[in-house]
Image: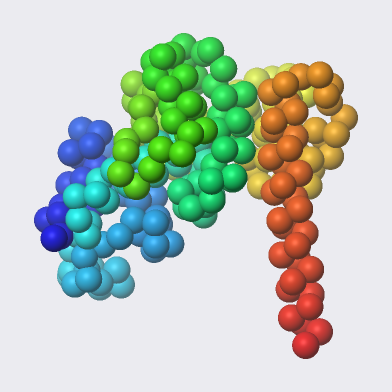
Length: 224
């Protein structure tokens, strides 16, 4: 049964945010995850015709939307958010990265964090809990997308605010900006005794390997 909720209705219900007056960007991010198939909509909805409102397919999509927007606060690309839902190995890698990034902080970029919820958020992400039916703990007092606006995600903003980046921050910044090869090369130069950096390095190596395999596949198609 259709939920009867549009995307703005759902965001208001979940986060008490009116996207029309507070953050149209948040609605746009949700719509991008509808377009990539992560969030399901009612069959009568027509994404390319603004005369037809877009309704969530069912109540379960509220949970999907909630988790997707929490993850999107950290992982900017909707494709990465969708992959976290679908690929348990990738999801666990991302959980390790989140743990290394958030640590025991009480705030980021002026956004208050609930430290126990941050820990539970990371634990739940690392577990096999069903992201389609169980809400992740929300560590944010205010959604970073709302506080930071459309040009930055939480981790990117955190890293670029520093005048002198630490080596680990250089790795993370390159990763967040999508330069996987640069991030992997920087990680190679770092201290392997650092457990958090080791987790990030392994994650980067997997991402780089996937990118290279995809490039090789494209080359094969071009030769056919």
